[in-house]
Image (cartoon, rainbow, N blue to C red; front, top):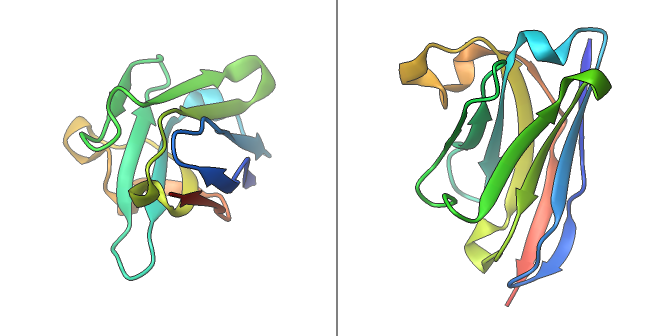
Length: 123
């Protein structure tokens, strides 16, 4: 069972990278998927979440700029990041779980975690 996050790198402010999260060993479609991020010296925070039924939720800090989507046939989840800001610099992690609606961004609700992909936004 594994989640593999990719797509990070050095991006200029205003850039639009897309992060990918690939699952192996289990059906991603059976789980809700979240993207979390952790910036240096800061606590991990939830960024986006997609239900197994495709409903989506976003942290206020990224709403309108980030879009999470999934392709269950490919066992993949994506996060399109637009209008990046330097404060979006962080290591981004995807996670699979079945969180209750009030705890979508609670890390303990998630069973499987990717290894993280680093996004650095230069001003």
